[in-house]
Length: 325
Image (cartoon, rainbow, N blue to C red; front, side, top):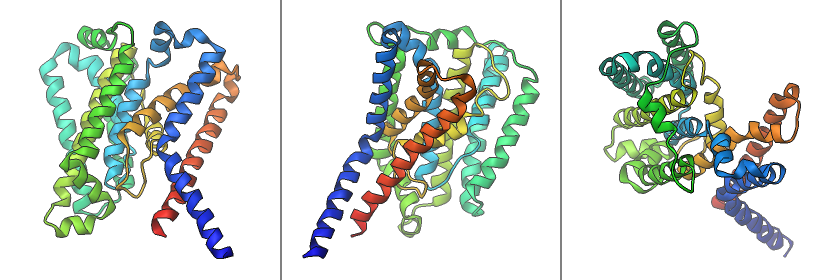
């Protein structure tokens, strides 16, 4: 009887954990917005929301790029420097020679696809290869833009600064990205194969699918997300520099995990990734509203992230216990 009661209790805990895990990003974002709205009500107005979410979109796009790669069990440590390179191209080459800039961006996506194929074909750990690639992206960015500067094309700035009625454009973009990401990764047959490549690659290969082509396509999709993120970023900041988005790499990993992604692959949530990206982008604003000294903001931000991610891993472990039993 004692063993039966303990199993029932463990099953109840596992069931609760499996229910809480998908909604954890929603709860975290709701708590953040509640505190921000309570401490500074104007922050949730139309104008305040535009300021609050001004730089959220590039981080969300970087997170979606990371989600594509994590779906197949890999990790991209170059996405931040890649976005910086795209921003430099967008602020220097794109205004002067759109054709050359477009060709360069297409080549970057092709290189990303080649990296994905190389990771699978040569069995190179993605962490090592993408870490080395991050230095390549940074070096190219420094060649293109040695010092901060440049200027975003007018059409890019106009698109990024477009004001929609009633609801800020950023919120509409988040909804669209979550819906499109869900359709591609969760609902489409290609997305199902991508997740299968992360969960059980040997079974997928035995069924006749090429893992080399699969990973090439996944990395190419991540490259497209990174290009859009870089163009949106330069549209927001007007100018660029070679390291403007380097911090996005770790933020994208944290946001993806917060959104429900698993490092082992096979389990990702585009909607959760969008919410995680938003959370990561407004944590800094939260600390400002809490009147925390700038000397402590970085440390406090790290503590908050560790706490939230530890809770996510705990919920994953508890819910996984239920599946294994």
